[in-house]
Length: 421
Image (cartoon, rainbow, N blue to C red; front, side):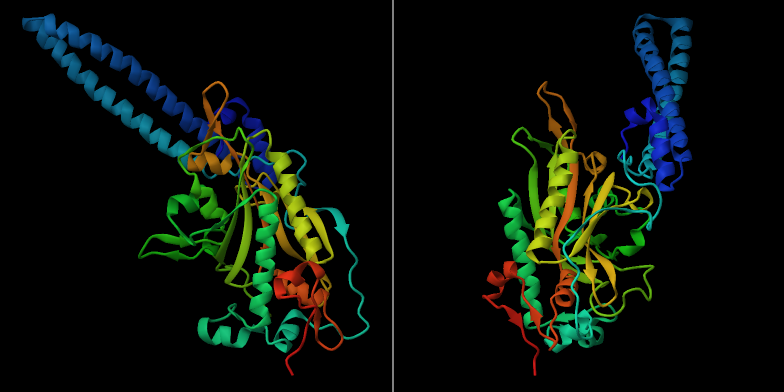
């Protein structure tokens, strides 16, 4: 949620951010108008309340006609005070609802534009050159008896799958490697809930423009998370944190669920875009001053994981129009996908500044004893989708797949995944 003080003091900054995102800048003026009405009603309310208190003392001392007149005035004041209190509450409700529709303020330097206007920051690794026909991940996965989409569709419908045998082991290897990476960087591993309350889902900013992508269970009024970021953001909701010793870091392991609304016909083959997957997500609570540095640190840990998997990739700075509502800046790491000769997003890391913490009531106590909102950051360390890039980039002519050296300890020392004959 946007800081109302910032909105009052520098509305042009917020308007510019809205324009950069392609969002409605007039929301800023609507919030300011509602806030002004709230403050005006409160000022009048306090003035009349003070008069009420003074009048109460006079009534106690008055007699006869004077007392009757004072009582009449007191009743009139009570009606006015009640009305002004209602006006202030109504204006506050409007201001809050409208302010929650304003996305986080875009960080300086974020590229302008939409989905295709990202800026490539760097390329890492060499794309593989094959002297044989390239197989895609599904053909490879079926040959290894690792991926079964037919039975997934039979049991659950389109975009569901089974990981079997070495496929299941490969996912566990990736996720366990991610947990080890996180722990070495000071993260606490957490197995998170995958069902959350509406206020937690809304607090993270996921019930905005993309709410139709989230699974909702009406009978229980609970949401299935699309990332453990949601549960981790809610972990300290309503709390005051001590960040004097540095960031609080958690690595959430969870199943994730996404309806993939609006993606009909897109990446339907295999396990690129699916309704259910597993992920290890890095999540940090830190000070506002440290947030940008922590963002770069998370990106660095993501890149270390990609190096462990020996995947060629690029890092992009996502354009403002393609940011989620809670992100002030987002970096994606995209691995090369040989079968489609394109890059595929494997990780993203977002700096959400104080946006989520304000919504969820998470603060830190400062040196002078006051409190202020903290910053939240998140980033993917490994997910099911990594199997796609790993199989395709490390495939061999006979349909086998070379196991990167960094993953071999997690697969019992296996060096090659052999097709099932």
